[in-house]
Image (tube, rainbow over all chains, first blue to last red; front, top):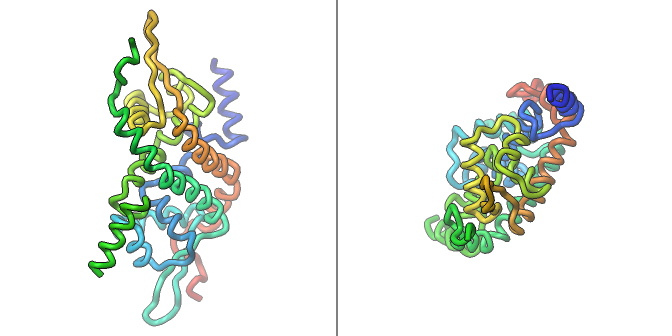
Length: 137
Length: 137
């Protein structure tokens, strides 16, 4: 058991595995799928945006959460922040190549959710009970 | 401005949009990409699992969080809980057809993260500063 655990730990160090608690890939997953992370990535697919534009596009995000999310995505190398040396100075954000790749998968996921929403809503209303009736019968 | 807002609201009711704060698709996104939601879906791709098996496979999840996550995914119609009428009774979980579709996208995302991890880690160490040196120069 311990030998197996050790072997799995070694393996997870060689081969990234989001299921392993200590794998750094899991933290990246958390950043990309954080409450606002996915939405920021989605908006940036369409190109460079200023902070204020991002805030306008993403319904419900606060200034503080948007800033924190952008910083996280920037430090993972998904987003690049660019300070323009003009008057008045302005800052904008765009996806890096790595970010474009990640965003493609996020867009596939959210696109699927949007398309599947009627079916999901039917499932939600149809079987909301914790223990579906008759399952034990 | 108000007319435009109203138009956008109407549009978001007709066409699901995760960027709209009030769109139900956003809640579904949050469930599928919750801290443990994605990992539960991933494990269930390989078939039916008991609660204890899920807990063992997903490093770091608590009983409480796993139960809560499964309940959420079940009420969205992604996971089906099955109580077997045997002695001792046991309960297992599997993906529904809808869940399989969603899981495909989550697996593509996490697979990409695992594969891209070396590049992500290089980006993390290479440009961790909030304001990259020389950007204003």
